[in-house]
Amino acid sequence: MTVAKADLVAQKLLEIKAVNFSPETPYTWASGLKAPIYTDNRLIMSYPSVRTTVEDALAELIKENFPDVDVIAGTATAGIPHAAFVSERLDLPMIYVRSSAKDHGKQNAIEGALKPGVKVVIIEDLISTGGSVITAADKIQEAGGEVIAAVAIFDYLLGASKEAFEKVGYPLMTLTNYVKILDYAVKDPKLSPYYDKLMDWYKDPKAWSEIHG
Image (cartoon, rainbow, N blue to C red; front, side, top):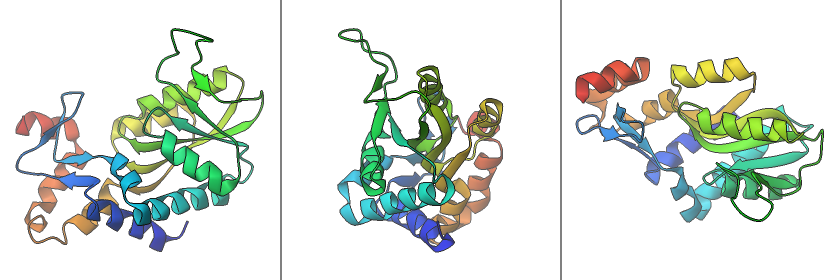
C-alpha cells in the first residue's frame, strides 16, 4: 500500500468524523480510561466513496504483504463488513469469528467454512489493546486454521497492544494510526494548540487519564 493511500485514509476518517478529538472534554472508554479521542469506524459503511477508499486499501495491503492468504476473516461485529468487502475484492472465501460461541444449534464460534491448514488474515476495524482480535485469531488457530496476520483500519498505538501482539506472534498491519491522524487533525486551528496535550495521551494514556479524570 502506498504512503499516499495511507494518508488519504487518515484524511477521510477525519472528514466523516469516524475519528474525533476532544482534548478539553475527554471521552470515557468502556474500560474506564479517559481519552481525548474516540473512534467509530462503523461510520465508514455509510459513506460509499470513503468505504471504497478503505476497502481498496485493505485489499491492497493484504495482497502485497500476504499473497498466500486463503481465507479472509472478520471479527464480530465491527470487522465483518470489512472482511466481506475485502474478500469480494480478492475473490477469497470469508469467515467471521463470534465474540462467544452460540448457545444453540451447533454452538459455533466461527461462522463459515474453515478447512484445516488454510492461511487466514483476520480483519478488525481498530486496535486498542488488541485483545478482541487476538482472541478471535486464537479461535481460528484452535479450529485448525493458520492465522498469518491481523490487519486493521486504525491503531491507537498503545503499548498494551504492542506487547500483546509481540507475545502471541501474530503480525499486525494497519492502514493508519493515532500519530498519523493527529498530524492531519492539528491542521485545524481549533486543535493545533492541543498538539502537545494530545501527544501526551499517546505517550502515557494511563497517566493522562488519571490527570484528566
